[in-house]
Image (cartoon, rainbow, N blue to C red):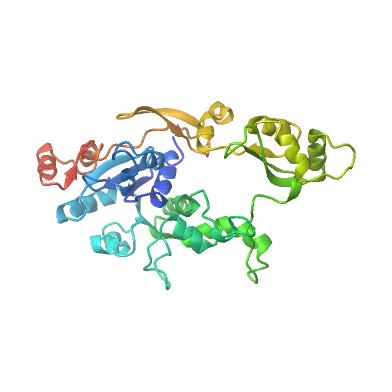
Length: 386
């Protein structure tokens, strides 16, 4: 068995915050059925050449099945409600007011399925002064303080490079859903689970808050790229935009190791210039290897292409190839968590509506003629439909 075998998820999420959550659940063995509108699908599919070739969508929707249902009409909504009792979890991250407009709010669904785990992810939560405000990743990061600590101390705040506002919120929601599912197994109760993107993103701010804000009495400063020779970013050959190594020598033993690597004798003081003179003789991968083997925590500054070619990630099986029905073999980054007793194979993201007939037959025992009628009037969309 896989870790979450038996958990069944109706996934109405879109873009990244919600889809990262449901992909994490699928990677752990949950059966995730993604509900998408016929024709266009999840808006994240638009981030690419066409709806079936979006690298963005492929990287946030692995191991799911797709059903294309138009929830804006009564027939489509009724189909979803009929499917609902067969699932443990309902996940949505629509903008404010959308689930209410669709008639899919928590109270309405709990009348049909009292033991349902209803998971909702919003930019600012469902109450409070900002509850009606829309949000995306960078809005959440700005609201959580992440911009304020990014950049050089004498420069403006900068947009962080990672999307922790989205995927970090999704990670929190996945953990909360799993906890609610354990409670449901133990006590037989469902519940509403809610994550605010602003609040979830502050989780990743706690070190800055704890070391730089003096319990909220002053603003933490911008982090910059480092502090002196023992915690900094250093250039390497051939001096391209990402040809740097980062090192962090926190302890006396690490600092002694750094001193030996760069050729400083005894207890002689040295600064960033001496470290830089040494790193500039090496490429970033060689600099990382020499430093790390000497006991100095260090890494090359990997760009996104470096990740797919990283010998360590490949040796561990983190970079994998999957067979996609349109694109052929494509490389994907696998799950970061490994469970020795729960092995889930990595599957590509589904085509739009790829599993519509399969799921409706499984869940509702619908006849082909019934489905054909709903395909004809646009309530349903099928495999690869555009």
